[in-house]
Length: 76
Image (tube, rainbow, N blue to C red):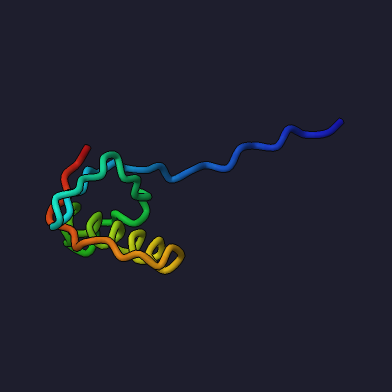
């Protein structure tokens, strides 16, 4: 009899709202919780900002359109 495959556990995500210097806003930006490891003393919002900047850079490489710099990041 075949065993049922177990589902892979996901690390989960946290949501953040981002405001850019040009005045645009994005809501509910997902950041993997594994990227938000505070064991080295970094602040949560600083880690989220870095992760979102990395996401924006990856999108910019694919679309050839840069986003404005991030002005602020808040938890959603």
